Image (cartoon, one colour):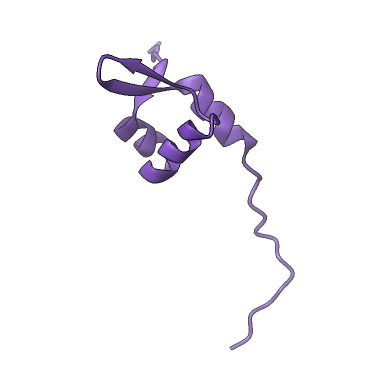
Length: 71
């Protein structure tokens, strides 16, 4: 059985990769206090629990629209 260790925090590039959230949006969310970031020397890390909580708070996409597009 293989155990994977989930990271406690992500660097900015890693957070972009795992979440799909744009770099500018990550910095905006941090400045608004919606993402918790910590500093390790010069390196900024986004806490994994904070990123997961933010993503879980987003609305679910509804693709069952009754509107039909006609050409």
